[in-house]
Length: 118
Length: 107
Image (cartoon, rainbow over all chains, first blue to last red; front, side, top):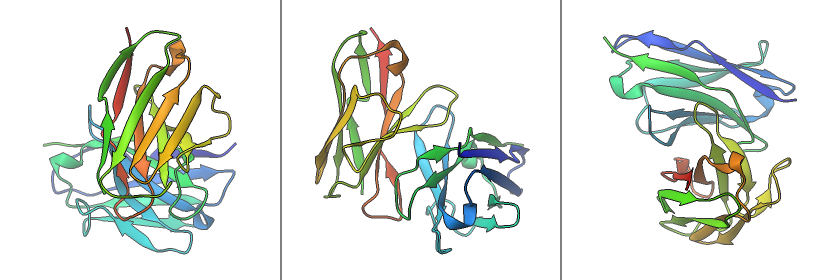
């Protein structure tokens, strides 16, 4: 069964950088539409970034210029490089897959907590 | 595109029929999905393309609507259905947008 596992979260100081990883099983990351979605404590879902199967990327305005989504085909892993982190970036970050570009998200990772605090 | 769910909070009993509404600020055809999320867990896809049931999801869940108004209906609430539900539009993005969520609790 398809599975996604996020790693790399933790406590980071404001202004710092962190890279989240999302390892995939039973499907290839580079051939799929992949997304990062986050959820601040007690809040709703917020889209962060997507990468289309062909490589086109998009970002939410709140993270544009600070976050970068990428893929490593050899490791079958999706990444989210986060820099200039702010307190408002504190959230559980989920990676997810869509069966085709611009689709719904049918498989989700379990989520990883990123806490930005001094 | 803004998505507005109503109600934001719903209290119901096992066996009840419940309906959650999602209204888009502009037409999105049938490009809408519904997710269920339980505390501490990832969202789970229930419905896509407004009315298509995701594989493995019980048939008591159904979706309808097109354009700007959509509904998620649970025909007979089961104990495991008490959760938060989100709609998501897929027509015009970026940005991908979610509704604010509807929390369904046991009466």
